[in-house]
Image (cartoon, rainbow, N blue to C red; front, side, top):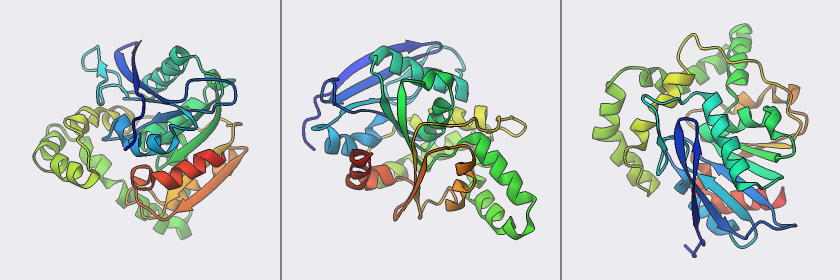
Length: 279
């Protein structure tokens, strides 16, 4: 992998200290800026192969979300709600002070991205959004309800509930932590080719604080920036049908189906780089 000229910063937000990394060209007129937000159970290193593809042509910012990688929480037990995660994202953007950013999110980073582009703070700051394998939570709930009310779509509902069944397991105390430490972390690290250390355990709060039964997520607000949704057709966790209905609240929508699995940004960095260059 070529030298990426990494520049590291620390951004302090309410309840967290975020490790922020800057790569590639310096901000300048005519230089596109990307903000890359990773998901679970990863940190910013998920994107290093992609960054290597883009560092010669783009200004790239990536950060470890709260309590992942080199970031930490400063309060116990820590706030991992979607509101806090969106605040972190905008704190990074404010600190870097770069307008017109192309936001890219994967998995939980994509979920955060959906919250960000619906936030009034995005105006004049985020000019485009690319979402990969992470739905808006309000849209996700509405999608499930619509399938439940339509018998001919029950197979889609059943398929997604099966794909999401692991979420229920993550709500249990102690057991998920034990399974990750004993079995899943070594398996994931071997398959992914990168160390995640204790990130899978630290990140379980994302599921427990945002997906616990009874939590309410508002219906999506209109999104007016161009949005590209990348749908890996071999994703074991998310149905490709989850894009149905996005056009009702995303004015400028492009859905791209790709031949790959959930971690497509890491396994197909060249293809993602081509997509981002063309945006």
